[in-house]
Amino acid sequence: MSAEPSNQLVTDRLLRSWLRCRRRAWLDRHGDPDQRIWSAHRALQLDHQQRCFVSLLEQQPLAGEAACADGAPAVVGVRLRGRGPAGLALEAHPPLLRRSTGESRWGAYAYEPVMARQGRRLTREHRLVMGLWGQLLSGWQQGPVSHGLVVATGSGRLERERLVLGDGLLRQLDEALPKVAADLERPTPPALVSDRKKCVLCSWRGLCDQEAAVQGHLSEVSGIGAKRRELLLELGLSQLSALAAADPEVLADALEVHGEQHREVAARLVAQARVQQRGEPLRLPVEPGQPATALPELATASGMLVYDIESDPDARDDFLHGFLRIERDAAGRWPAGLATRIGCYRPLLALQEHGEARLWQRLRRLLVATPSDWPLLHYGETESIALVRLAQRQGASERELVALRRRLVDLHQRLRQHWLLPVNSYGLKAVAGWLGFAWSQKGVDGARCLLWWRQWRGDGTPADRGSLHGLRRIFRYNHDDCLATWAVARWLLDQDAALPAPTGGATTPMGSEISRVIPSPASSSGSASA
Picture 1 (cartoon, rainbow, N blue to C red):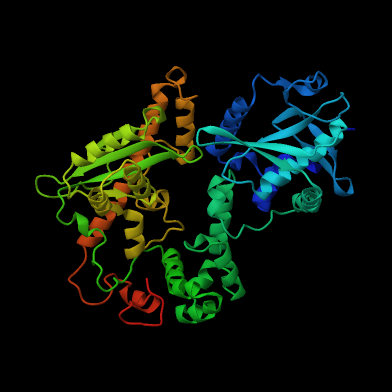
Picture 2 (cartoon, rainbow, N blue to C red; picture 1 turned 90 degrees about the vertical axis):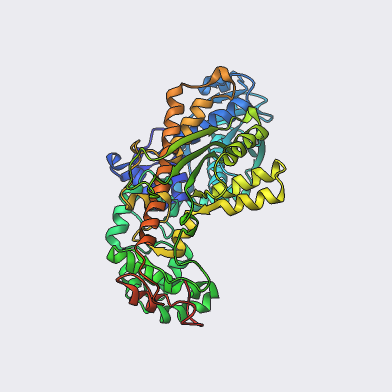
């Protein structure tokens, strides 16, 4: 069969992209490669795949069709071509074929495709891509392919799952492929997806971010996902500007039919859109009985610990616990500005071979060595959940657990309780970036840090460890995360210090607007609260 022009083929890579985002598949074919942003996620996927296959196979796989003809136990480097619905040209490159029982053009054996799964369950993407591999492999080897093998690493062992490639799955594939082809032939890219929270994993995110900003796409408003955007579109609110102009009371009444939870957030969504439209932060009214300041724990404390964890979620491994020790100066003042030489940074590396008991001893020793009134600041719930659960598993007393929980302060939660910011995400990078903080290693994120960790750790044995340079880059990234967390805390402290004497109302130049958009619980019983 003659080769099809590449712009007429539907490949397994394009199918995978399309199942994640129709626009992404179009850009994969037609987009300017120079506008792609390199992401460590692809490298992590390949690294994970390699580790899974090494665990699965007893010997090195051979390559190409000749290896299949020789009956090799495992084969790589095979390109499969065939035809789909209405003669659609298809191509796939399964990463691994494994010999199985059956009949093929080579004799009394056949091959089945093997996939390395990331995540904890099979998704539609896994199933349809495996279905395409099985369909093309069946025609190529002239023998049926009834199953595919899915492997994954979990809890230190290799998990195996046989996926049935039945008629139902193949019908789904036949329905999807013409839709993929139709989208790829469009003269312009499909619309932006409704929920753009997962776009952080995509190499085209920069291009789509620009488009979303130009459009005033509702996904740019923090707090709006796919479902909530759909409800707002039904009400004729299609852009950020339209939401900012909406009457919060009218919107709350309109959303109430879809559930009380939607009514409760209506006023906050309108206020968030207005904040982003104007580019100015907005202090939220304080609920009765709550402290007026965001960080009352720091009012009298002589110091604090800033805490940040780096994790490998697939291995369920919190491999680095980083602490930044910050103290007041002799005059009782906290360090000023966003300097990178604030405090004393201490990284605790947690190697799995050393065990949890040793890690808890080290963490406990560090916590005991700091004054008990020093808060433990972190951004998001990851650190508090991980530390408390570790303490519970290691037999910490109830008194010790209570004291630990009391010290933990989630800056993300406090920020959301007291402020609306002109950002489309309240993640640490977005908030600290808005404040002017810059990470010292350009283009580095959690995925790149995880890749460095896996490269340094190797197979887990000391003989396979990477260079100290790689480890230092991990420490530098974690240190920067701690400094970014401190930058958020420093900003909150500055805002708290600027508070005038309580007047019973809002405390910013836009205070009267806060009272209208997000009425305080004391002034309204039926309206949404902050």
